[in-house]
Length: 441
Image 1 (cartoon, rainbow, N blue to C red):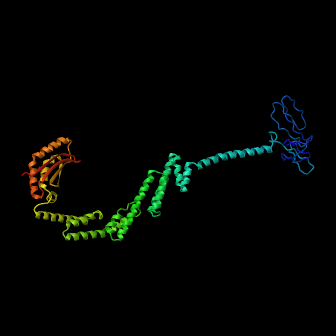
Image 2: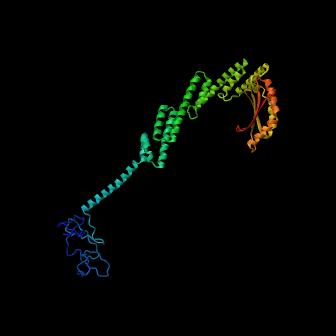
Image 3: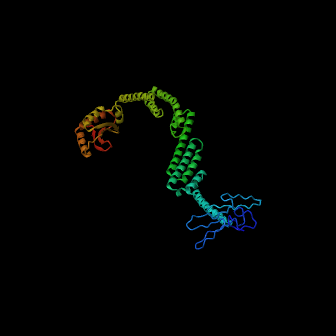
């Protein structure tokens, strides 16, 4: 028996189609079976009860319409009541023909298998991409840094592109700086910090890491100076303690403490120096007292009170030495003569004669020579050789003046055959001319 709905063969006496689930009813005269439309070249089927074949040029008709019982034309057929004696009505079909056939189980199985295979291919591609990213040099480097496996990280740097390589150097540098500051904050010993820095530098031998290694050594020396200052302070050695505290660098976290300690110790050290200098001055040892004060200037940061006392003792020492030499009648050396007498008259004469050339004069003593060094501050674009000849001629013309100075010098110092030397030089020390004048017999 054929199902009207899906056009499949169904068992005899079946009331429900096992394929489409619709009601099954045998063909009766009052319910004509579906008759397909005529094919090309065939004659239309004769009109039967309830069916009108399509004529050429007419619009498409529904495949079939059930015949209405006589006397009920235009009324909707009643739905069948299952389990009764009424014959179920034939279901009506919408335009377009029979419903599509359901796919077979084998075809469904192949669709599922194909879908799974496609999924596996896509999953394989994604996995390959993920694995490629996971094992890329940049990712291996990052995981090695996180695991503190710096050797592996360093071995991957040559495989990085420039941007990743630059970031890798920054990461190594940041780790080195952390080691530096850990030591600075006493969170790691110097040995631990140095070992880590050496390890990092061996894996990434860049200038930044080498500089941090050098800075670590400087920082260590700074902390050692602080410890020495603390030991000297405990022993009452103020000068030594201040000197050590002043060596603590600004980058050292102990710097502020060192500065406070040094400032605190300057006042007791200052009083100690003043007492020592005054004790020497009371014994008229003015030079010794001056040396004590002079040596403390840098430590005491040129304290005004110390400077004033130093000038006082220097003047007293100068007067005392001059009195000693004058009482002896002659100076023992030309150096002493220059120191205590400073022959200003001749210097003034020289400045007057050479003022046009912008000359400054310096007087010094060496052995049996009293030396006048005349420095030309500006050559005015003159040829050095020509200028030297002009100055030499001027010295020769005034030779008697320098000879008389030599005679006076012979009477003032216990030096045989004293000589007066006059030199003209440029600012860079180049000698333009030089003359020597001895005392005439």
